[in-house]
Length: 183
Image (cartoon, rainbow, N blue to C red):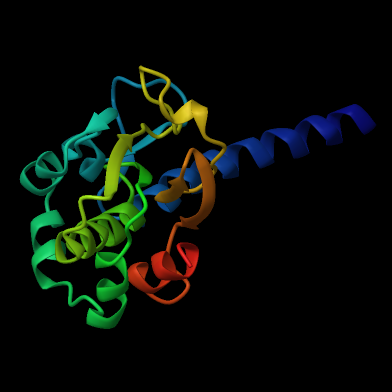
C-alpha cells in the first residue's frame, strides 16, 4: 500500500508539472518551444536574429552591423574634463575590450566607450575589441588569455602591466573610470 501511495504522488507531480510548464513558457512573449527540439528547450525569436561576432572585431563593424550601436555612439555626451585628461596621456596605453555582441550591457557600454575614444583622439591609446560567444569564448582563444567572468570587460595596460579594469558598467562614467585607472 505504501508503494502505491508513492507511485500515485510521483505520477501526480509529474502530470501537474508538465501541465504547468507550457503555461510558464507561454507567459513570456517571444519565447516558445521549438517543434524540432526534444525535451524542455525554449528559444526566443529575438535570439534567431541576433548577430554573434567572435575574435577581433573592428569598431566600424560594430557600428554598421549591430542595431543600436550607431545610435548609442552618436547620442553619448562625453565628459569634456575627463576626455581632456585622456587626450594628454603620453605613455602608450593598450585597452582590450572583451564584448559579447549578444549582450545588453555591451550594447549599452561599448558604443559609449567608442565615443569617448573618438573624442580623446589620442594615438597613444590603442584598443582591441575581442568578441565572445555566449560561452564567453572565441575560436582563436584570444579572450582566454584574460581572466574574466562578466562582459563587457575593459582591461587597461601600460608597459605590458595591467593597471585596472572596468567590468560590466563603470562606477561613474567610462571616461572618469579610465582617468582614475590611468592616474
